[in-house]
Image (cartoon, rainbow, N blue to C red; front, side, top):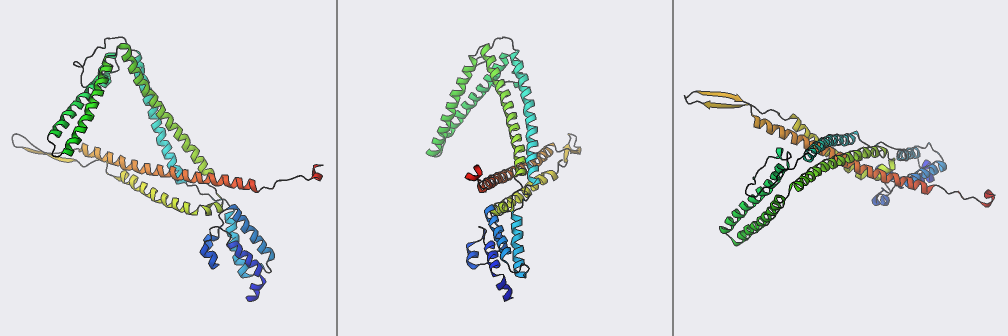
Length: 391
C-alpha cells in the first residue's frame, strides 16, 4: 500500500489541490487538510475549469490510474466536475400555476372593469342628452338625502343630489360640534377638555368647507351643472379604463416573468452551488407558504355552507304553542362570508409567494446568465495577425 501511495504521489497531490479549489471550502477545512464533499463543489466557471485542468494533469502524471485510492478520489472529483458543467432544471410548476391563477383573477377583474366602463359611458350619454331646465335650489329647500338612481335624468336632479351630499355633511358636522362642546363642558380633566375642544375645532373647519362647497354648487346655472355631471362621469369612465389597462399590463408582466423564469431555470451546477444557501431559504419559504395557503383555502372549502335551521316557538293569543323550523339566513350568509375570506386568503398567499419567489429566482438567473456570458466573452482569445499573416 505504501508503494502504491509512492507511485501516485504527485497525482494524489494534484487531486488534493482539486478538492480544495472551491471557494466554498471553509478556513477550518483548509487548516485541517480535510474537506467535506459538499464543499468540494466549485462555485464558478473559473473554479470548475481549474478543477477540470487539475484532474487532467493528475491523470496524465499518474503511474497507475487503476490504483484503488487514486481511482476512487478521481471518480469522486470527476463526478463533481461533470455535475457542475451540466445544466439542471430548477423551475417549478407550482410557482407557474400560482402566477397563472393570479393572471386569471386579474383577467376576470379586467373584464369587470370594462363592463363598468361601458356602464359609465351609458351614464355619460344620458347626461349629454339633457335638455335645459331650471336648477335653482336653496339651502332651505335642499334635501339631506337624494336618490342617486334618478340624479342623471336631468340637471335639476343632479344638482339636488350634489347639494344633498354637502348639506348632509354640514349638518353632521354641526351635530359633532355640539356633542364635543357638551363633552368639553363636562370633562373631568383639563387634558380631556382640550382634546374635545380640538375635535370641535376640526369639525367647525369641516363645516365651513362643506357649506362653501354647497354654496358653490348652488350658484351653478344649467350649463355649469351639466358640465359638472359630464366631468364626474367622464372621470369614472377614465378610472375604469385605467384600472382595466393596469390589470392588462400586470398580466403581460406575469406572462413575461413566466417565460424568463423558465428560460433562466436551467443553470449550471456551479451556479447552483453558488446560490445554495439562497435556494435552501427559498425552498423553505415555498414549503411553509404553500402549506399555509393550503390550510386557509382547504378550511374555507370544507366549511359548512348552510347554517342549521332554527327552531322557533310561536305563542298565540289563545294560548296555543307552535314550533316551526326556519332557515337561518343570517347564519348562512355569515358562513358564505367566512368561506370566501378563508379561500381568498389562501389564494392570496399562494399567488403572492409564487410571484415573489419567481421574481427572485428570475432576477438571480438573469444575473448569472449575464455574468456567465460576459465571462465567456472575456475569456475568448483575441486573434492578432502577424506581419506574415497580413501579407
